Image 1: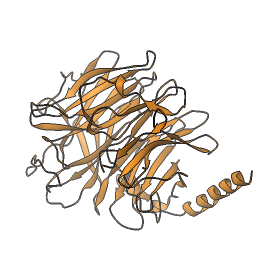
Image 2 (image 1 turned 90 degrees about the vertical axis):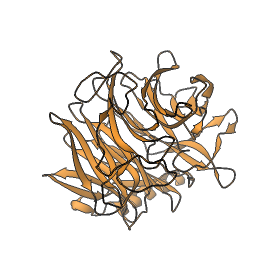
Image 3 (image 1 turned 180 degrees about the horizontal axis):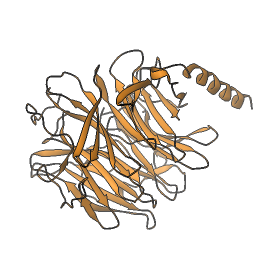
Image 4 (image 1 turned 90 degrees about the horizontal axis):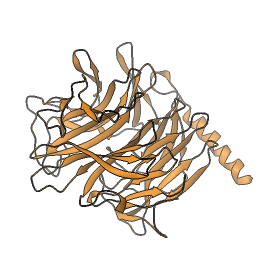
Length: 423
């Protein structure tokens, strides 16, 4: 009982500390430190490490890298917060042994989803590796290794996944081994009723190019919205020609944003290009940022009409830092707006739809306040600090079924993971 009272008191004090005025006169969200150690490798821009569940109640599931047995390695776990604010830890297991992998920043991070039966699915630590896939055998149970249940004979990177309205899951990965000189985007489906994974299709491929998955989101009609980027084969941290694709599971049809059917895999000549190439923009194969204009990180939501709303980072021609941009689709095609470009940002971005407006989430590279949300009010983007005084470096956001933005905020400096609620 004393421990419970102390925990509640800590939450109250934390709430008082974080409910302070921030940009645009709004209060910062109430944050909680996830009460489990975090590894320094828990940082990515492409991942989908957060899932929420419940209407009359609210659960949050946060997949993360935890410390390994030695420096340079990590284990993987889910931090679960129940409706009463209680936390529990679900480690990924290989039988009776915790799953442990080598640190690899920007690649070996987890993505997760909860299927319609309440089982957790986690894809972890894959950088041109065979499958590293874990699933609960019971509702809400400890995830165990089920890597042998995915189609074999391929190595993958950048797993992102989401839950369909009917409880199925959809997974997008980059398939990495192709002697023809391309790395393809491959879409998979988890049939929740039959408890089986199948490959839907290779959805994007182009000779001498590599596809970088970004995000998957379902709309109310049961259609899947997909975004991805392209880089020169085999890899580069600077990508180009952010692309969009919509898939209808009911008809097995792929379309552009305007409804035009397209054959898959789409290529750079058939893809629905959101961010076109600037005059001086070029594909370069490079292990480090080659400079120049290009895309790095993008996330997706849909508005009340089911149309895509994309937040992404793009370095404009002549700039040395990435601006934050929004893309929406209308009668005239893709409408691109600059949300923020006053200071450098990191490869962390997300977006939600509140019912009448988009919220764009991003992280600045320096300063006392780094994590921000921007909203367009009266034609002007106004930002609000999410975590005053905390050096947040990465984030993820999920709009819960109750209509609250649940925040996943990573403080690498102090090795802390924060849970937040932004009403």
